[in-house]
Image (tube, rainbow, N blue to C red):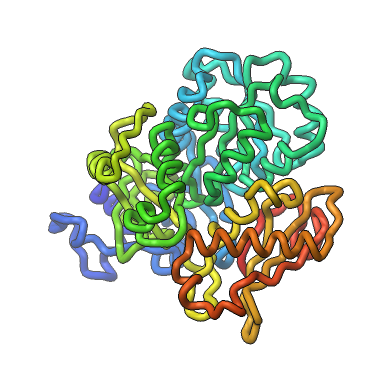
Length: 441
């Protein structure tokens, strides 16, 4: 693929010439320079980044959460390859043999999530999956309008969307979720196993291993990997053993853990971050996506778990694992301790407070603060009280003590309790509906 891209993609040929790299002389990965959004993608016109200098049949726009938006070319060929990731998830759901309504709740428009998901699901239908797609997008009212009309006509319903938005939909009173036999597909955010258990219970999902899945997807290259029942079973074990998780992942937070096919998306590690190579509308070679994470072989993972006496039994392909924390800009430093949104999420999902909050929050640590500042969105109809704020602070602090030894040991005791501010549901300043939420400021 490297030599093919060097020959056919004008921008990549120029990129190599600027660095004195002769494609014919390359024999190892290390001989190929890394590409990034800044040193490659943003330096060339869109057409030059494409094969033969011709822009493909569709363009998606990245969210721009870490800077200005970028444009990514798509083609039906990309979707057919990536549709296999959806196929793996939907087979685990039994959707290859059950009439399934797939409800796409990702944003619709130029962003990658919604339209790309629709295209991949229609490829599944073309391959013989009895899947029907409806796409209300992230319009809660429209989702709740189409579900009662359509869901009873199918054997099961798959909701696909961002985790906090799907939880908001599922928390709607009066929806007969047990009648719909719900499955859930998420992307875009790391969530905790407490979140999975909580949402599964509210959606009447009996077996989260075969009824939920997270996708590791990016605007740059579509879906790179997906959860399997095997990876979920492993992650649930590690969530209950923070010591084992920290030894394996090297951090006091639980990453997304997925399996990937290296013949389609080839990963490498670089200083605790990920590179990948993939043939897309814009082919990317050794592309440094800046996601923090790492790789574990299939055999290496099972051997590690065996040291703790754990032998997973759930089915999963004989493929390697990639774990992803996300990007380092989504973290707060306080007294030298890194405080991760994933730590806070666990505290908000404990039974004593979970019914009062949506799970969305904003974390910050301004200079001179007497504690990390935590602005929390309340569930619809919940009244803010000092007692509830104190209860949330205690629950989050307990999660930080259990999961984050840095926080426990670096931060003075007097400054450890989070300073909680409660905001009403869909507060326009902190939690505007219809946009991708940012947890750190």
